[in-house]
Length: 595
Image (cartoon, rainbow, N blue to C red; front, side, top):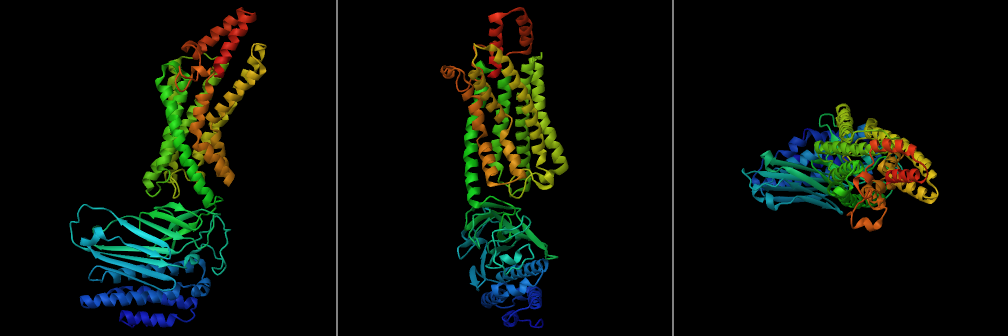
C-alpha cells in the first residue's frame, strides 16, 4: 500500500481496507500509513484549475478515511489498547489530519470555502489572499457546536500573501481521551475521581498557515461545545490537548483558555492559541454549574456594593477632621487595603490567559489581603493597649503601625514568591495555587492574626464586663451586654471571620462552605461599613452633623481619643477620689473604649 504514489488512490485503498472490522493492530498500522503519507497528499503538480478540483476530491477522500478510525464502531478496537497507547495513537491521527488538511488547503488557487463531513468527523477549510483578510471571518458550525477565530487587526497589510485555515470536528472521540483505564464502552456516569480527566464534549481543532507567517496572526479563538450528557452536578473547564509532536504524548491543559459561560448543556470558551479543544468535567469539584453561576453573580454584586461602601468609609475617615483619631487612622488603612484588594479581584481574578499578568494579579491580591489582616491585627493591639493602660507616644506608635501594616505583608509575599513564584496564578483563577499547600502562605499568617486578635478580644471583653459591672445602677446589665455584643460583632468581622469560612472551604470544599465564604467575602466591605459607621453611632441625631460615619460620637478630640498618659493620670487621680465622682470617671473611660 505504501508504494501507491497517487494521493486519491492511496486514500481509497486505505478506506477500503479499513471499512471492515478493525483490530488494534489494524488501527495502529493505518494511522502510521496516513501519518507517513501526509507530505505526499499535500503535493499536487497540476494546473491551477486541476489543483482546485484535486484538492476538493483529496480532502473528501481523506475525511472519509479518517472517519473509519474515529467512529463509534471502532471503540471496541480502541478499548483493547491501554490508556497511554490509545492516547498516543489518537494524537498521531489528529496530528496527521491537522497537517494534511492544512497542506492540501494551501493548494487552492483562488478564494475558497470548502467543507465536507462524514458520520463522526467534519472538515471546513478557508483559503484567501491578503486582499480578502478583512472581509473573511473563518468559522465552523456543526450541530450547534461553534468555533471562530479572530486575527489581530492591522491598519494595513504591507505584503501580499495568502492564508489557509482548516477546522476539524471530531464528534465522538471524547471518551477515548479518558485518563482512566476503564472501558470506554461503559456508559459515562457522573461520578469520577479527582485525578480523572473526562471529556464531556466533541473535540474541535483549528490550524492556520499564512505566507508570509506574519500576514495572519491570531488574537483569540472562541468556541461553544455541547455536553455529551446534560448535567449540573459538576462544573466544566475549557481545555486543549497539549502534546509533543516528537513523542505524540500529551495531556489536557487549561493554560491560555478561559470559560466565558456554562450551563447544563453547553460551555463557551475563549483561548489565545491554536490546537485541539474540548470541554472537561471539572475534577474534584462538588459545586455544580448552577451553583457556580449563582456564586459568580453573588461575588460580582457583593464586590461592587462593598467597593461603594468602602469608598464611603475611606472618604469619611480621610476628610472629616471631627472624627480623626488613632482608631480612624487604623480603620482608614484597613478600608484602603480592602478596597484595593476587592478592586483587583473584580478586575483581574479571571484574567488567567496571560500567565505573567495573572501572577501579578495573584501577588497583588496576596499582598493587599494580608495588609488588611495586618491592620486588623493593629486594631486588636490598639484596643488591648488602651485597656491595659500603657503609656505611649502617639507619633511613635503610628509610625510603628505603618511599618507593621505594610512591611510585614511585603515580607511574607516576597518570601513566598522567592520560594514558589510559579504558584502565583493558576489555570482557573489568578490566585494562589493549592499545589504543594502554597495557599497556606496566605492562610497561615491570616489564621495567626485571627488567633492573636481573638485572644486580645477575649481580654478586652473580660475587662469591659469587669469594670462596667461595678457601675450599677447607673449602667444597666442590658446596656453592658448590648454594648459588648455590638463591639464583638464588629470586631469579629474586622478580624476576618470571613476567612474562617475560606479555610473550611479549602480543607473541605462543599456547596455550603462555598456559599458561606462567597457571601461573607463579597459583602465584607458592606459589613465593615455597617459596623464601623452605621452601628457605631450612639446618638442618631448626630448623623447629619457628623456626615456619614461617626465612630466616636463624643464632643471633642480629647474625649474621643483617650491617650495612655490620660489613662495613667486618670488612674492616679481616681485613687484619691471616691463615691460618685469615681464612678463617673470609670463610666466615661469605658464608654469611650466601647465605641
